Image (cartoon, rainbow, N blue to C red; front, side, top):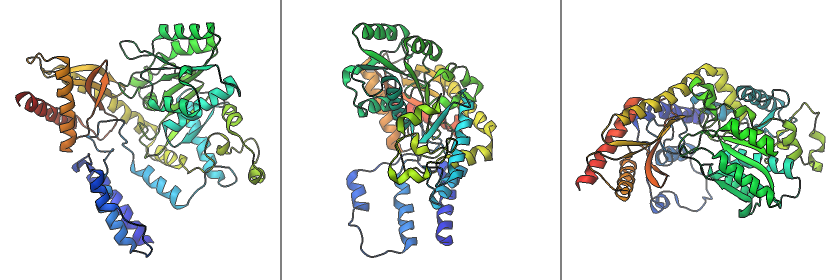
Amino acid sequence: MKEYGYSIVDAVVDHTATQNDKKPVALASRSEMDRMFLEEAPEKPSDAQEVLDFVLQNVMTQSAIVSHPKSFSFVPGPSNYVSAMADTLATGFNIFSGGWAASPAAAELEIVTLNWLLKIFGFPPKKGGGIFTSGGSMANLTAIVTARRIKCGDDFSKAVIYLSDQAHSSNIKAIRILGFRKEQIRIIPTDIEFKFSINKLKNAIAKDKLEGLQPFCMVATAGTTNTGTVDPLTELSKICKSEGLWFHIDGAYGGAAILAKNGKQLLKGIEKADSLTVDPHKWFFQPYEMGCLLVRNSKWLKNTFTEKPEYLRDVEGNESEINFYDHGVQLTRRFRALKFYMSVKTFGLKAFRKAITYNIEMAERTEALLRKSAYWEVISPATLAVINFRYNPIKEKLGEKELDKLNQYISEKVVGSREALLVTTVLNGQIVLRMCLINPRTTMEHVKETIDLCEGFGAEKLNS
């Protein structure tokens, strides 16, 4: 067992030490993968080391390296080695983190680490609470379930929920899962800076109330996936308070920026939320999977999710001994708190603050670099380490359709080269390139090399 385990640790360490020298992109068709892996479940055993060698050679090499310094797309997962080993401990000891009776230490560490986050985000330390989830999608679902229960009770037939056109898709998915009809969802257009339009929100709420409907929840975003934009949280909180709406903030991407001075100001008002989603497996540098939901009052979760089946009647404990299966959807839960606990204890919050500050400043330096070039146009400025731009040489005078095709071509060629993961998004109807720079291993040299690669493919297309 030790020999086998050491082989795995050696492989993880080797990958961590050499990942910068590898290609970040994995490309394969379904037929190629079928040829490599498709088989019937074997009846006879195989040598464990041979199976491990096969996995290392074929599975790990056919997966994108999201912690690579040139993985710029979606939201990269920088991770950290201490947390990876913590996950190994939690899995190796097979800790059940659902209830106090099964593991008081696991429950206590979840309480402790949630309290750290409550303090970081300015939530009430005594009344506030939360739960670790698989990711932001489950955290947003948990929040909206709770909002519906607290604001609507059992009848939500006239309930209406509001979110912007830049809100993360997981919120729409959660709303649909919960059985809301399309006509109960209000997608509010954003302004020219991709922020929630205050006036349009007020108009929508007023109209719905006049029609006898029940506005019950508003979802704001602290760091949109597309542009890193933060909605006007303080103004939105005032509307929610005056109208009696539940104020949920999806800070899955940008919430962690509160640790940096240059991010905290942008997130002003985040402490006003009734519920807040943050994703430690994004900008808190944790391995997948780890999301988190924080709430102003922990009783809201308990009142929403508690069920008391006969087989759990002997393990309820007292009020201070939290059973986290009463605070969310899952009964069986893995010990997610351990990796967050061990990494913060090992590195200290100062290291996290330094890394996040570095990321935000790098995006600003990237913006400055692009603005000095005759080849690039900044479409959405650097915000919380996200920047959007497109190849638009001054001398060429290209039309919008030509620019869209050109930038799509550049992205496809860059990804096809496997040198960097850089894909497009759409802003104001324009196809643009998007960089998300939350990896502290990324340097300006990595950024410049990628931009030079893009320029080369752009020139190639124009000359063809």
